[in-house]
Length: 147
Image (cartoon, rainbow, N blue to C red; front, side, top):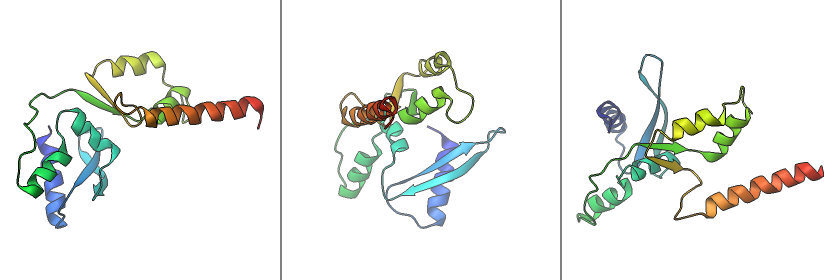
């Protein structure tokens, strides 16, 4: 929970008369000031899964509000979650966009959280991760063959 970001998001959506599902992506500068990088409206995005992983299903809440019913008990447990886009993590570790970050530092950072939310990886839905792995293996095979 972040009261400052909640207030910022509410203010932006109020000024635009936005109604519905949406999110506001921000980045913090070195002084700790949030800067809006991307509003997402009318659809879920990969980052919004972090809220679900932390115990807050915003889509179920929206449905409850729309129907005027309670569909489930609230989850009171909060978890320390990090959202990981696996493909870019591999690119960073390989140094594709500059100096590589050692795997030991990446693993140490990931071990500081209680839950890792992946863009592709989820134990209950392995198909996206399997597709990514298949694509990576096919790409590696083409490089080895020189095709």
